[in-house]
Amino acid sequence: MQHCLGLATGGAYADPLTLVELTVAAEQAGWEAVLLEDYIVYQSVDGMPTADSWTVLAAAAVRTSDVLLGTAVTPLARRRPWHVAREVATVDRLSGGRAILGVGVGDLELSFTAFGEEADLRLRAERLDEALEVVAGLWTGEPFSFQGRHFAVRKVVFQPTPVQRPRVRIWVGGVWPRRGPVRRAARWDGAMLGWKEGPEGKDVEMEPNDVRALVDEVRRQRGGSLDGYDFVMGGGQRQADEGAERERLRSMALAGATWWMEWIAPCAPEDAFRKVRRGPLRV
Image (cartoon, rainbow, N blue to C red; front, side):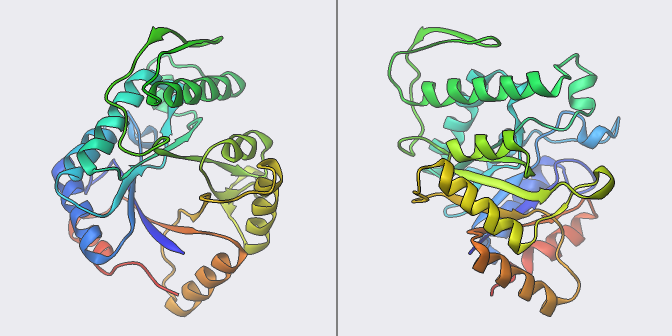
């Protein structure tokens, strides 16, 4: 199981230059990937300083050599997919083929509502699915056109393409066992479904039995093949009890998780660097 580091893009350590330095430190500490949150207004906290994730990743790409770089997640429902296709392709070329596009419908927060973006969940899901088709189609580098309910593209050739072929890997976020996110994740390259529906509408972290069920369902929807497919679990902060945390990671790996994501909540920059430099917890 590989380890990715989730970094906040709002709060005390989310200055763009600090985020770049944290990414460099993460590579040096042995993290295999760094994933940034993607907000316009950070978690609906009006006035909180917020960094643009893909701009930061472009800068980090030229300061690193091995660590994978991506988002958790870019809400394509409020983005123009051709702009995202160009941003991600640029990061992939700057990094020599290390970009990851993490996607989701996005939470209904100020990044949507303050700017008049689509609020309806069903329509946001439709926009996400169409946007993914557009992004992947443009990345082929072949003449591409698209006509959907929400997006339209006249025949165009997108160059240069990403370094990665057939495309930059796409990891789909969401909540287990909702059918939409699971179906969507099975169509692409990875399931970033580290959370499940909990009591009283509050999401809780996945357990090993949930991961096994997710793996089985994705395998079924993909016709039995999981070659090259990623299951990205976690997404919360590291437990204080290191022994218990190692046992949790071990059980998730045995259940089928191929990646574990540890998130660093907004905190003082010195605390963020300390947490990054301790490195991933190996099992």
